Image (cartoon, helix red, strand yellow):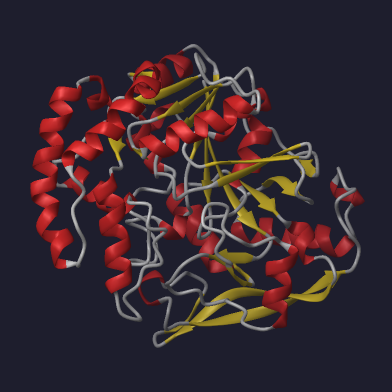
Length: 427
C-alpha cells in the first residue's frame, strides 16, 4: 500500500501543482478530493505553462490515471474548456480521466449568487471569494438539493431538478438585485456539455480503493490550504470544503487506514489571497519584493497575493491537524538577496505568549519575530543541500527542527527540475 496525501500547509497557493506534478512522475493514480475551479495549479513544462483548475495535476504524466472525486464541485463549462486546452496541447484525457458521478455541479445561479453577495457585502464582511460559485454549490449540497455530475446522464430528470433549484434560489437572487437564469437556457448549455462529460463518469471511490488494494502508487491532491479549511481555518474567511488531509478520506471515499503518508507544502515565506487575518503580512518594500520575485498573482484570478514572513505557529498547527509526516518547502529562491529573514516564532495574546496558533483570535494576536541570516546567492543551480549557501541550508534545517517533521523536498526555482529531492514521498 502506497497512498500519499499532499495538502497546503498555509493559506493555499503554496505551489502544490509543481510538487504534485514532480512526485506523480512515479504515481499510478492522482486523485483530486475537494474544491472547485477556484483552485488553480500552475504547471510549467519546458517553456509551456498550463493552469489546471479542476483536472488533477497528474494529467501531464502519460502513465497516470486521474480522478476527480465526489468531494469536488465541478463547473461543467470550465471542465470542458480545460479538456479542450489539454488535448490541444497533446495531453490525452480519454481513458485517463475519471469524474465521480457523485460530485456536485456548479451552475449559473451559483456563480450569480456568489458574485452578488460579494458585491453587496460591506467592508469587513467581504470574504474575498473568487465568485466561481463554489460556496453556493456546497450550500446546495448541505441543503440536500444539489445537482450531481451524474445527473447529466438523465437530461429530463436534470431539467426537473433545475426547476426545483430555481424556485429555491429565485427569491435570494431577486433580493440581491439579480435576475434568475431561465431553466431553458441552462438546459441548452448543459445539453451541449453533457456528451463531453458523461463518458468520463465513474464510481471513483471504487477506482481509488482498487488501486490502493493492488499496491499502486496513489496520490491524493488537496485544494487551497489548511488555514482556509472550513472547520480548521480562519473562519469565516475560509473556503467551503475540507482542505486538510482528513478531507481526502471523506472526499475520495477511502478509509483513513489506507493512507500511508501526509505531506504538507509551505513556501519559504507566507502568502494569502482574499480577505481575512494575516498576522505576518508585509505592507512595505520587502512585501512588494517578495510579491514580484515570487510572481505572487493568482493563477485563476490574477489577483496580487498578500505576502509576509513565515509563520511557525501556523505551520505547527498545520502539522498537527493534518498529521504531517513531512514538508515540501517551495520558493526558497525568492528569499535570495535578503540580508536577513524574519520568522514568526510565537504570539502575544491577552492570556500571554504562546507558540501555538491562536486560531480563533489570530487577527488580534501580535506576532513575535526571530531574525535569521539571509543569503545573496541565487539557488536555481542547486540539486543537493550542500550546493545551497550555508544560510539557506540552516534555514531549512531550522524549519525541520521547529515544526518537528522532516523536509522531503526544497524548490529552488520555478522549473520542475529546479528542486532538491531529499526523500521519496512514496517510499
